[in-house]
Image 1 (cartoon, helix red, strand yellow):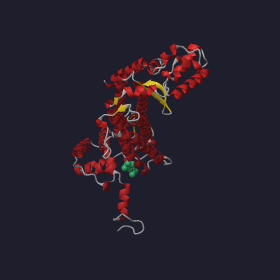
Image 2 (cartoon, protein in one colour; image 1 turned 135 degrees about the horizontal axis):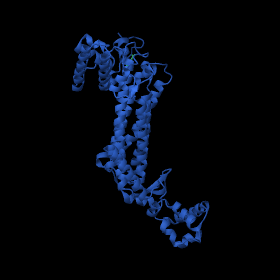
Image 3 (cartoon, rainbow, N blue to C red; image 1 turned 90 degrees about the vertical axis):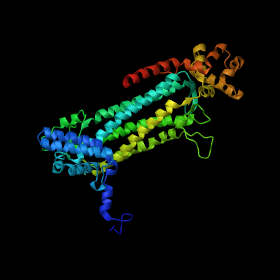
Image 4 (cartoon, rainbow, N blue to C red; image 1 turned 30 degrees about the vertical axis):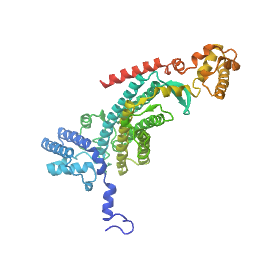
Length: 463
Ligand code: ARG
């Protein structure tokens, strides 16, 4: 019977509530591959160290193989009453193997077991995310090569600032992703120490070989402190923070796609495959995938915040609070993976409207800086003075509702009498971008060079 005072929606009393809050198998069954790998490494080491017999080891390994087949084949029944993935697997193993199965947990605890499983899962996932980041870089670079000379407005404050090239803009994201990958690779390096054998918290009196299990599982070495081993979750936090930063980058690009695909901007058309229609407004092509990539950043950053809050103030060592590391981490990293895949697809398929971009680049007096620079270079004006004169010229063009290049020489000379015909050479957007030759600048020849450099580097990596 449920408790009359607080039983509420629970029909079968405190025991059921306890089971519901305590069990993690609904989500941690995702760790089954890692759990079996960890058990294999552990049991082999136990036999090697003569802690269990070779016979028992063989029986356990055979049993684990059957468990693996059952889970893979979808016939394995996970039971909430058995709490988590670890006890579900061990209990089934006992059914298959008999009492020998009980020896698997010698010199091990669920505390070091779950830390090991989680690390293996995060490590595998970081590796595949790194690959996906590379794929997105490659997609961006390929488009950057294609559009290294396509002029578009560059923005500050989302106001037209100076003309840049579309290729240059895309390469900015390649740089961001390069740093994102650095963070992921760095997190992986620090993560790669094996907690297995720390046991509950203090180590074990059995003569285990932690270096052997670490090696089998692909770790660089065992963790050095047993207390830290079972209570560290900063490997997950580092993964989540790298994921958050990358998600933030993706959300910025996604937002740009949302802006660029509006009819008002019209810089870019997403492919049909990455657009959706409206059920009521037939004219619409909605950038849903971009919007969702923009939004996924919310749950990814949320997961990082969530786990930081779970961990803060926890006394050493393991506490059940730490079971709350899983859902957020699983969800965040798979959301990032999906976002990367969607962004890669959108970038590969999109069609830029280079005419629209160029037209927009020419409006909004985006070459005003070029005019000011010309005054400095040709008339040896101090830049501040040139800035002032240019502002007056922009004012004149605004009043006349024309672009800078449409003003006549006579008009220009009303503001600066020393002005010559030569000034018109710098007022076009193409001229403007071509002149931005400083290192890292937007000149098409530099963009092409940078894109080729990235391309070679990414292709080398792929081999
Ligand atoms: N399901 C648990 C978790 O994910 C496993 C470790 C349980 N350890 C314990 N001492 N109760 O954290």
